[in-house]
Length: 135
Image (cartoon, rainbow, N blue to C red; front, side, top):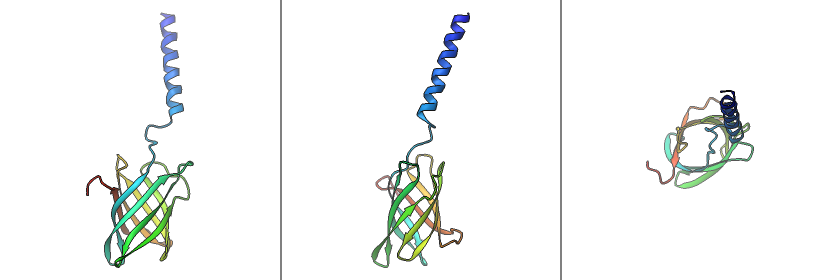
């Protein structure tokens, strides 16, 4: 009996070590080209948001949106590595900078978000779905 208990304990410890080395199961990286829409002035316009997870776990990327028939672009950066599906980023483009808060679905294939200029509370739509995965 003692011998099998020892084997069981060793198995449990080995499994725990394997989990610790593998990291959390939910630590999927967020990466891709997301097609969607954002609020620009009084309009909802087409936008493409490209995101990647940096080596230190922060989100970084760029975006392009329809700006009255021409394309405007900007950058996105997460100042501190976020956790989970809701992330807070800083956007920057020719109009200024501000905050974008996005929440991804469970599969990390789409997000819904709100953005705002400067230090104002985000309240304007910004969403996206991995390009090529439906509407």
